Length: 148
Image 1 (cartoon, rainbow, N blue to C red):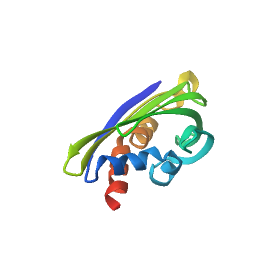
Image 2: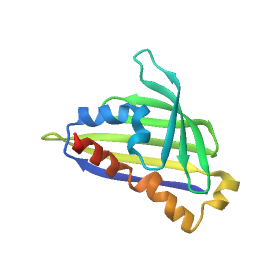
Image 3: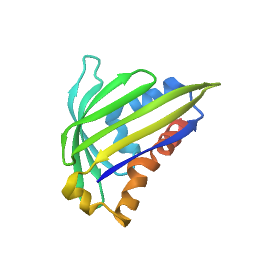
Image 4: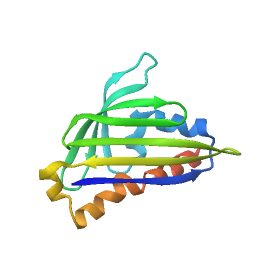
């Protein structure tokens, strides 16, 4: 079973400020619902996280994913799972400068839970997991960025 989707928000903050928030991946558990923990595996010469291991609350159990990040500052942060509890994970943040100190942020994710776990995450459980993994992310970033 696969789950995919995206969410978008227009944020009253300049693109560089929004980029600084998403680029600091270590802080993501502080503002992303259901993301319980991040363990640093590898950082680049500038100290930015390159490989991290995330623990997510998937309602049926905690899921661990080791992901590799790719940056195209200040417009795109993407990640792909190297190994983990699910079959595959790929996601991204895409930022667009709207001018006048405003930014459009789009969060996209695709998770393939695999055959066994996919059987558990169906129906009402999928309805509970989807908003956490997809629906609310852009609004969470908006709240964080506009808080200042």
